[in-house]
Picture 1 (cartoon, one colour):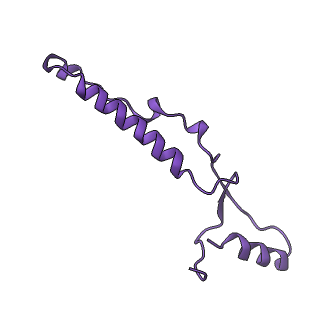
Picture 2: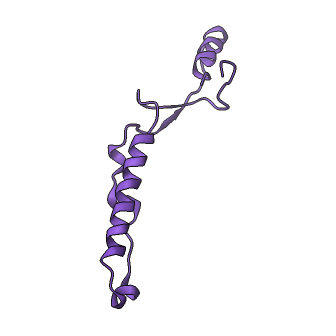
Picture 3: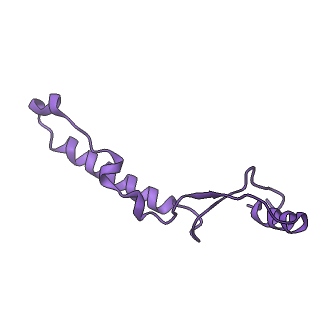
Length: 90
């Protein structure tokens, strides 16, 4: 994949490469809580059944990345080309 490039100049605001581990652990906690609700459910409570939402079980502010940044190129053409080549690599 040495010749593959990104399609847009976007990068994360931190040094973390992805949030995969954070998302997996948050979904694991959410599935565990849903299983707990279903396990302790009686037939009378079916009408009042409320599942926990993912935002209730995890906090996105504790994830590794802090969003994304779109890069603009306002510099000289030579610097812009070199920076663009380095940024657009996968």
